[in-house]
Length: 262
Image (tube, rainbow, N blue to C red; front, top):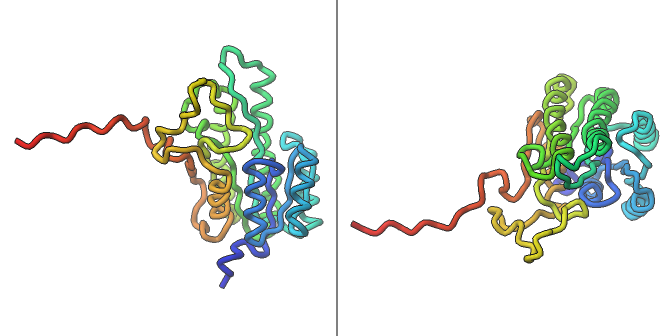
């Protein structure tokens, strides 16, 4: 029976965008659970520092997820270093807030290149080594902005909607190979990508969420761990909102007065 404290012992993972933020949190979580992890990012200094901190179970590879040749290099490095591939976390992404009226064609294309094309290239690149392994788990990080129409998120939101559709299609195509594909939809998470409050009235943006706060990276990592592990062995093609209740419905209005007895 697998040790409860090492749910990923003997597994090998690739995590993109792993140098900072949620990606770094995922890397720490998976290594702590026994996985060997290839960390990829364009932020070389932070990536190398994290890999050094994590020790022999981690390696850093410079990686532009929108570049097909870079993906070939990452897969080669993974197999040569750790011998297999079991888990892929397509976490790398870029984000900004901008009105559709102000968005540029280059900006829109760049969002799709990193957020959607990068995810596609990751899925496609992982198929062969995972098939050789007898299966695997692909976890694609979408966003709450990919499930609801959020103002000022035209390029980002559209690319993350695409990640959801691609995830379901891949789950359908790859299930017979034992490759599971699921999407994670974070809400407001405390990383550098979270836009600052612009109200000037004190940051109360999340006070009316059901849980009344923004999320923490390690809360997302706990879900990633579940989807990477055998605990989710019968789950594929699913979407997991992890947003403090944002998607449950409109913010709660004040409680109505109780009816008077008649």
